[in-house]
Length: 262
Picture 1 (cartoon, rainbow, N blue to C red):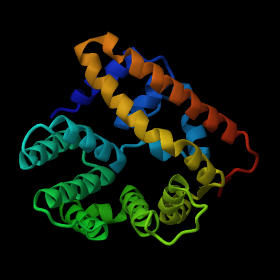
Picture 2 (spheres, rainbow, N blue to C red):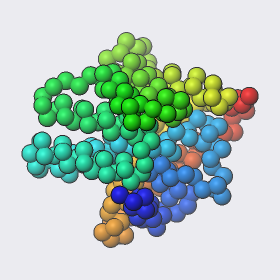
Picture 3 (cartoon, rainbow, N blue to C red):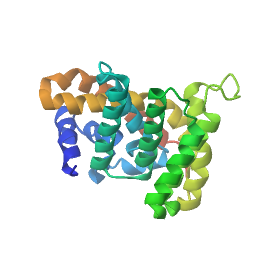
């Protein structure tokens, strides 16, 4: 599928939301770069939230969940095949990047395991995804994006599960945030010589709205192709969430000595 296909959806979001909210929602939903004139890139970087503006496995997981719901009326095997096919089309249209490929492979394994009534172990799925990725894209072994994606996923698998032995005061959002950053923070500091000291806090404060924003972004992008009026309620809710996101980013960016750069 040609690259312009994604622009069809991002243009709908541009029409439905005002700036900078349209740009932010396109970033969260489709991984579109933040326009330089908005002067937001550095703020997201300093507050440790730049990763939510990049396509990741979360986007694939959200798309997969929506597709499963759409195809829920057909036979389970057919629904899984259709879901995997649509996810592959999406992956091709946005480009094969390490986080996307990892999520597609792991998602496909999980879906097929459900169909054939087998148990898919996350750590094994991650290893298989990494092995397959490096067979087709061996240069990814030195890719920072590859390391960050697999590092974050490994941290979540090992320490982010609700079954993991963690103190009672670690909420699910806090546990997932800290687990993902356990392996990614050293990688970021090693390669970029940068460290956001407020990143754990900012991620906790905004992580609960990222998933809903992805969902709203996909709803707006799809429904807007049918009729612009259908996007209005979703756009209003998304704008409110994005205002909260910007409030946290701007407030956290004011904290002195919160960002280390060597």
